[in-house]
Length: 262
Image (cartoon, rainbow, N blue to C red; front, side, top):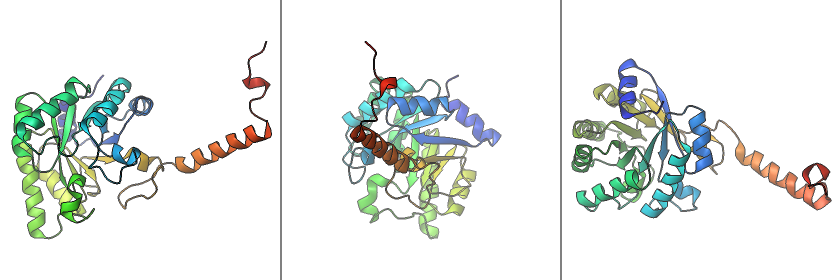
């Protein structure tokens, strides 16, 4: 049975913790869906998969391309499209238009928006477009933040982020990503809002956790402090490629078993 935003609200009320992972293609989405991951985020972190230095260059066209692939692979998971830089910051009208494209063209069931976009969140929810909010360390603002720095340290900064989260809840967001926050602040915000919080580098006190898939699989060059590799596919892929090349060089592949008879 497909996961909906109402399921997330019920899980929050029950105290049921859950996971979200990023996905960017059809086969991966199918695997994660079959594994029972309830939320798949087509993150603008696809920028790293495409070789960009940060998330800023990713376009709407690229995001929609990957979102369509993921929604074709997900049968049960709730798929959220991550709105890329400058797809919503210029005006509410442009934000509405691009958010609608994620549902209409991409097949997603919701969108994620970085920062305190209260007016846009309210308008989208009025139109029936579910919004996952995102506060704290917002990678699209990396230059304004002076790098990927933990946010919310100090009373004033913590209060501002907590107020942003509460305002976004009031505007109609169905959940909120808390990124790069001190653990205590992550737990405090979680207890102060009625919508689920999804942590990434915000400590264990959130309702859910999200990781970038390539970090989880051990494919990234370097893991951030908050990430955990649950596999080492970078080494396994390299070993498999070298073994294939050696077999081709020696003539061991293809053998009779892997050839068609006359």
